Length: 269
Image 1 (cartoon, helix red, strand yellow):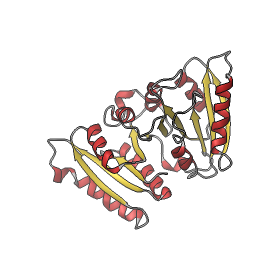
Image 2 (cartoon, one colour):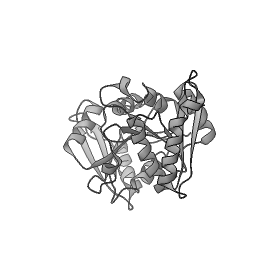
Image 3 (cartoon, one colour):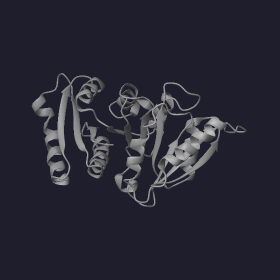
Image 4 (tube, rainbow, N blue to C red):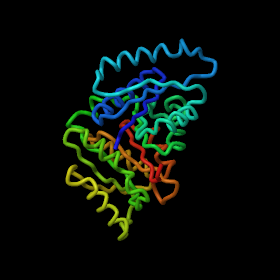
């Protein structure tokens, strides 16, 4: 269950766009929203907090009294400061923005999105620069694509956040997408896992399956997304090991996706 959402900001368009997502999700989940700003050691705290005060004013007007929120700052390296804040606040979801699809070096605040996904075992919702909440909230774009290698999950609660977010959509649908090499077929265990994934979201959410044949995981997912225009969000599970979808695949997907990307972890926090 989503109780606390952290939204890091640097006051660029990219981070404010992701804050819009975090704000709407917090409202729908009735969750506490924390707007987080990392301060460089040389920054004047009083000057650095001025933009945050403007954000706070806007949120108070937007949210009214229905959603609790607070604005927090911490000094030091971004990821370390966020980890420290996260240890105290125990977020259920982190919402961050990305600057585009030209490689990991252009991710929001350098490579911080990748570092957060790597070092914090918290679901991360990555919002590309071009992804607006209006499209996400459009009934015509109501399908979530769960890209999976169909390996059994060690943590059977890893997908709870995905289901909760899906139910915020208008008429949500989930498609379990498997990318595998041409000429291969699913073994018994993977077939059972696919059936289990489909059953997990039913009957509340219409759920089906799809397969793309190809040699590259990210290429296969991108090919599917190019051919289907009803996608609202892509979800992947980051694994330390596995034959197909591993951590580096979720990192690469974060750098190329034009859709919001929900990165989950198959580990207990």
